[in-house]
Image (cartoon, rainbow, N blue to C red):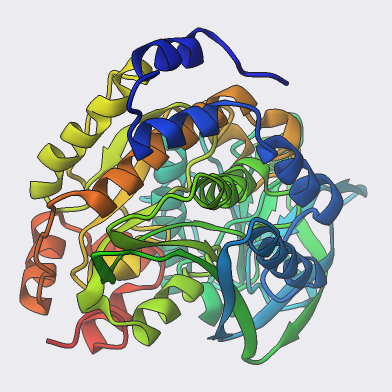
Length: 474
């Protein structure tokens, strides 16, 4: 497709004389680039990219090759993933006195492979008093319509899991929050340490089970799950670099995670923004842009299991030299602004930078800390950080699902988002912005001020922070 449109023409007419680097970069990103072809290659040809899979390894080599083909310096950054888990098969059936019926289901991450059978119990609410000991709980979930629905689902599932564990349940069946038998993969609150079988069951099948249980029928579940499992292994991020000039030791880093779950092909989560990172680097190199600060563009790995790739990066590189970290990870809906993650001072700075792309606004920043993507460990390290805030187009209902495919990406908006992000990254790299890195006390104060403990427990990152395993030591 060709995107020479009114937006581009307006830029050309406004900046035909003495264009700045930011103006030139915006125009290049809005014009004809290989971003669509890159995204289709990543999603349709390589497909879903679970960390530890062959497809993930192919994606890493593909990303490295794309940077090198653009003439951009890039390298693989190795790190340790704590565990391997790749589901191959998940089958289930529900047994009644006079027969059985099959159900469609997938396992949550790190559910142990094996054969499971036992009584089913309907857990109607968090206050339910049913006896769950030695039984399998099935729970309802609201339809997921948007990003807010995703956070609500994570929250509710965590509370269910806490209660089920306390009451001695053998496992949990979660009703899919998506209609038409759409399935998706989620983490449990124990993430890589999980030992309880948990499943997402097709919404229609779960409703049938619950109706029968409400009518007083005795039901048992029989489920079989096969998975490739293993101990710690080496994975890789891909890091590209546009060298700085007058302040080359200072770094502005922006990233998008290249891994995905494998029910779909990881298009909106997060292949579209991987393609953006590659295109940003490609256009900066082609235009011979030489920022004052060094700009790094990262394709993070191991994000879905707990942001392991970006965490490792914060351990292996000098965070004192990192002036800003940006994560782009909420699909291809229009960028509405940025989350500034507890750094109120960033709001004014980003407001200023977004004036360069105000034709694509309006924009507003939200000073709320995000837990759940690759900004997290930069935040724990006290580095000023941003997360792109997107319109929810196609994101929530397809999140981690078999429907997260190339055709769900808003390709035109992806290019506009690239121009917005490019203006912020290059503007910050060249700007007189020098926010201090926060110490551990300040980070801890931010965590307390925004009541992040439960959310961090939800993703199994609270204890690593408290113990000092993750984040600043002082």
